[in-house]
Length: 97
Image (cartoon, rainbow, N blue to C red):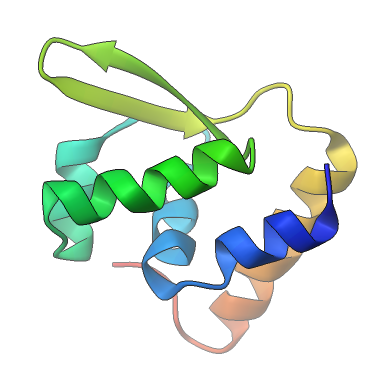
């Protein structure tokens, strides 16, 4: 897993905010992410597709919705990168709602 792919996936504010929510270890419905991030379904789906392609999240279908959670198979080195980006963003006072 390339560091550049992780950083690129996290470089967009909506994706970073989604990761801040998902990184709590829980499972989050795309409907929740849409509501909390004020994003349309198509926009949120595109962003989540980027995070999924970077292997930062996994998903499962639940009726008409998709639920996302952090990838439990994410290498520890990659998880530390995400931890650092989220921590740095929190220090800047830009934690997701």
